[in-house]
Amino acid sequence: MVQPGKTRALQSPTRPHLKGAAAPTILTAMHLEPFTSIAWAYQLHYYLCFGAYRHRATFGADGSGELITGLLAEICERHGYHVLKLKAYPDHVRMLVSLQPQHAISIVAQTLKGNSSREFGARLGMEPPLWKKGYLARSVGRVRIQAVKRYLAEQSEHHGYAKRRLPPVFRYRTERPAVLTAGHSSFDLSHHLVFSTRKRAGVFGSALGEALAGYWLSVAAKHGFAIDQITILPDHTHLLVRTVPKIAIETCALALLNNGQHFVGRHYPGALIEAGLDQLWRGAAYAGTCGQMTTALLKSFLSQEGNGRQG
Image (cartoon, rainbow, N blue to C red; front, side, top):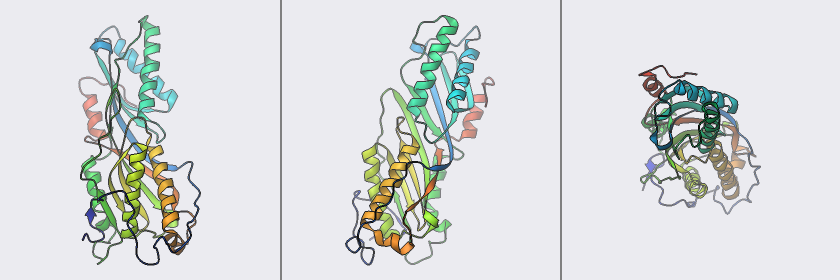
């Protein structure tokens, strides 16, 4: 039997039975108002690459490279995308952008490619298409993804719970990461999410944490994203979430917050009553991207063999 506070794999996204006062048959379910928006702290960095149609050297001469980077920078400014680095090569463009939680990568790519194709063609008298189908999208961040995984795994020690005989912590890490696919794109989009309870009240123990984690896995599967790692502590949770390009991280967070709150209010209202809460979560969250490369390393890479455009 796995001891509370130890990392384990959930066999299924079903709710285990809790013994004692918090058992679901004791109290009437609570209705909790869903969130429609979130106050964010975030750092969301993405590496994007767009290829020229038929791999033509479209941006190789006559100032066309400077033109396309200038157009892309203008489009980013109009739509609230912050350019960290932007560089044109003869047959493709690479860029590093900072986005907001409501931005979906597929919409960002469509906006950049569609608007730049139209404006570039109008400037040079070129017939579309400018770009080939599809794009590459990768998340990057302040630290690499392995550091984030270690951070989530060490939360019990970080908060001083590890020495308890029964630590009030539940940890989950997938043994078989879900495969996410999307047409005309190559992507790897990982996000670290942090939610905290209202008033930072200690709501969760290891058993309730396991129940919530199992339910969250079913929510992710239904909505088309994946959860690779979860750590649930008494007053806050950490998740490592992978998304497809069409889903903004804010959409994932709202699905997790609202469904998780509904689940606890319906099945374990005693935990909320004991904590004196009429709302499970604070209406705020943190989201940060991570990946195989750091933002600093990628900026350095794009700075080589030319200056590129930097924001």
